[in-house]
Image: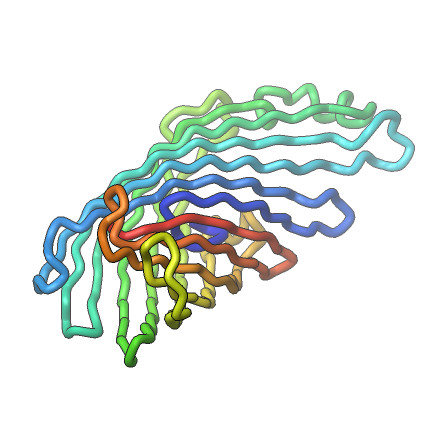
Length: 274
């Protein structure tokens, strides 16, 4: 969620450039979903949503001059599941508001390899305290959205503004020195515009949907990631089915490029509407 927009399934690879240290690499996989519990024409439109996510973070630490061996290497892994509920308020045909909240459970692990004489003598005595630990974490996330979507002929324009506040609280840690009790914020704005292609594929009318998204990260997450602003530019190919395929009335495939604050990467994903 921090690095790229939402789909039903997506994956991505990102890199954070660091001065005088090896780069940090992020590999992600996510399966978020949302299901509405009412008709699109209802004034109040409750929904449930959830997600599963995997994150791998690989980084290193350069050995000091004169130390024997290689640079240290660190790998962090996260597995998370989340569930939540909310409701849209249909203000007009083109404008709606949304309030929601979600609860996520995450399991984090850290592995650190002491590969040179300096880290083996200075850092390794604190092994299991600051290195090679694991943790369980709960995250509570309220979110507010404002969505404007208007149809101009056969084209559709969409503007979304949203803010999420993440409250993190570790409930179990293998190290007495590693605990999390923090709050972070994510403000994001997304603009998309879809245009029919005039091509029919898989018994569906197709359209192309370019988009741009800006995200601003605040609080502990911004400090921990050394990352504040992200910019995402991408496009989807949208399939509007004349009859439902499986449970979907619409599917889309696409990808994007993400950049910001010495950070860049790509995101590819699949999405759909029920």
